[in-house]
Image 1 (cartoon, helix red, strand yellow):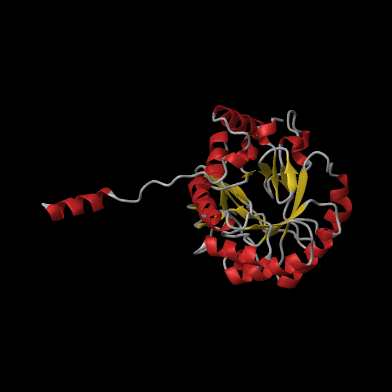
Image 2 (tube, one colour):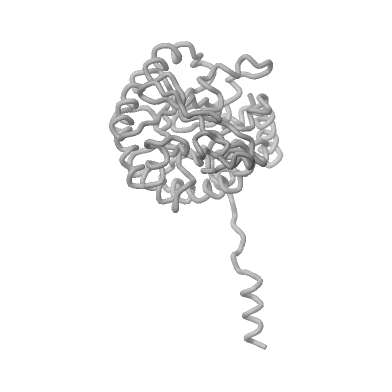
Length: 325
């Protein structure tokens, strides 16, 4: 691993700025069976969304392809926190990379309880999922109301000393204000963004393809939206030194570099893994090469370096000249 890729995120040492996103790599072991894939290529792995008790998830269909992306509505299928803590976490090689548990709940109390349980484990950090768009209780409701987001983060903060990363929903009016409330409540980092809400329809049956009717849209199609949201959140988070995992449609090194320039300290890879399991190595190589070519020592020298264009429009210029004439 090239030294210029190494950095710190929420006090954790990262081999590279890449984070493998929750729901895309199971519980951290699945991709290690692929020739050429190694967990040490990434800074962290975010494990599958976990609830306090076992969850069976949504009815099928759960996934469908869309132009330049996909819709999923898995519904947080998982064996429950006790199984994850007692049977799954002990089998993970914590020397390879950092492991982040993604937690979700249907009440403030449930968020607090599951946080407390994982505080007593060797997991490296906790990601709070307050923005899942495909579960009926909790989920997106918490993520789209900044004050409810505050309360979730607040109760989680009281129940752990581990780094907390809050996953923000793009399906809200003002994501920057939501970020501010989460920072006020004590989050250590932010993940920007979760999937967007979407639908696909079977024109023969005239019914939604997804059994849950709606689901989360991911993949290259959402990249421009995610990029803007990262920039907007960074305008708040930079004043508190709160780092961002930028995510949404990243498939190449150029994509990753854009997110870092917009303000991300790490970048999340998800949907791209489904069709190119070895994409992380390519992205790492591309970022490192870019840093070398631009005489940058690390990604820290690149974070938040976006320079906006002048917002004076040609229409304004034309109108000004017409008044003179």
